[in-house]
Structures are given as C-alpha cells and as structure tokens.
Length: 336
Image (tube, rainbow, N blue to C red; front, side, top):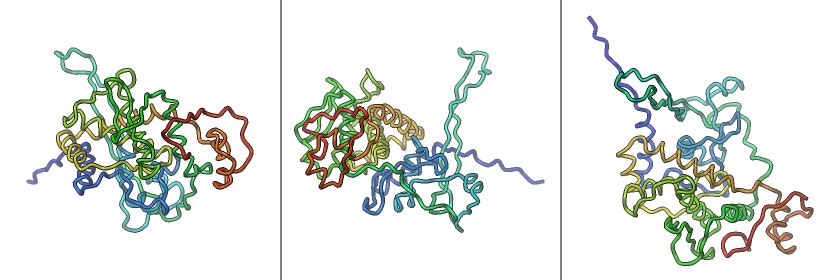
C-alpha cells in the first residue's frame, strides 16, 4: 500500500526575499545601474501589452533581469499575451516570476475573536518573459516625446521647487533632518555628474515624504533597524522615481547599507514587500509634483536659456502658449 506524500507548501514571500538576498550577497544592490547608458537607456520595466510600468516589488525584481539590463528594452509579456500575438518563445528560455499581492477579508470562525472579519495576505506568482526571449516580438520603439539629457535634471529641479520642501545647500553630506523638516544637499558642483545630483536629491526627497504631516514613517537612529528600513525605502523610491523620469540612478553605494538591509531582510521575509510598497507610495506622492514632459523649446523657455545655448543644444524655436511650470533659480539643479 503506497503512502501519499504531502508536498511542502510553497512560501512565496521567502522565495522572493531569497532572490533579493542572493543578489545582495554578491556585493551589489540589484536595482543599481550596471550598464552603459550610451548603449541602453533607463526606463521602468513595463507590461509590453498595456505599456504600464510594473510597480513595487515587481519593478525591483524585473530590474535585475539580465536582458532588461543589457538591452534597454523595458517590455515583459505574459504567456497569454505571447500566444494571443501569435509569437513563440525562444528554445530553452525561462520565465521570471513576479507577484500578485492582495489582502483578503474573510469571515472569522473563531467564536472568541473580537472582530467578525479577519484579514490574511494572499500572494500568487506568475511568469513573465522579456521581449528578447520571444520570437516574432517587434523591435522596441521608445516613446515619441523623449527627454534630452539636459532636460532631466531640470524636471527634478522643478519637482523640488513644486514640493515646497525646505532645501539648504552646503557642506559635504546629503541628508534629511526630520526634527526641523529640511533637506541638506552639497553644492551641485561637488557631484561628479547631473545624474548623481538628481538621484541624491530624489533620495532625500523620498525621506522628506516620511514626515508626520505627509506619509508619516518611522525614521529611527543611525545604525538601528528602523533607520535601515527607512533607508531601504528611500533607496527603492529614488530608483522608481529615476525610472519614471528617465534618469540613471547613481547614488553612492555603501557596504554598511547593504549589510544593514541584508540583516533586516533575513529576519523578516515580508520586509522587502513592505519596503517596496512604501517606496511605491513615496514615488506616487512625489510624482504629483513632477511637471509633465514638454518639448525642448518649451523647457528652454521656462528655464530662460539664452539663445546661444539653445542653438548649441539644437533646440528648435517656437514656444507653446501653454502655461509653463515654474523653475526658480536656486543654486541646485539645472544645466546653467
């Protein structure tokens, strides 16, 4: 008589956390840019059918996909999308798992329970394939309205202005001070490039959203667990925002941060999901301040670029009559 064996129940939270931990233990932050932007741009991973960017934990995981890193093509497809388009998978290709998460509200059957309903987390995974793994998939065409390099820091600058954040310039450290609700940034010329300045500014603006009058997060003290958790949220939020704005994330990577994040993730399999969810909330909050993408001529007019600079940059004449967003002239940001 055969004995029926019970398959161990899959722990999808642990599986996803282990994927991130494995990449970090190699000494790298998995969502940091390891590619040459001259060969590949930077956009958030997106659903190839709907063109909508993936969010939260799925965005962070898909940024680690080798083909996303190497090609600059952000498109991923489900098996049904591949089948419906009459395409096929390249031989031997494997899908990449992403996750669908939802909180289910169920009747509480415990007669001693105080609440009639109980909430349980529901997590399922499903595979996606990168466009480069699919036979017949058309070549990637970037969106028509593309930012020129000089426009990117200007949009970040306009976002900082629109947020109303108290930003002070000086010193050699970048940080957010919760006690008096201000952001401190070194002078712009102290950064090696504009991407570094923009990534850092967005990282600190991410911390700024945690004030009790905004998204109300716990900051903790340097070196403790709450501090590590907040840094992970600001790190992910900066990457998500850079992806939204087409900027390569270039924050300085500290080994101590990696060690702290690893410690937190190893202790709690749910933390990467919570961190990514909070980071997405931060990104959504900040994106409300981001001006819409406009033509080079419109942005040149708004930034009050002199004619000789417009000519050097190849910016066409002819300015839209639309009401421009306001760009002040503090000492940070912009190509001036």
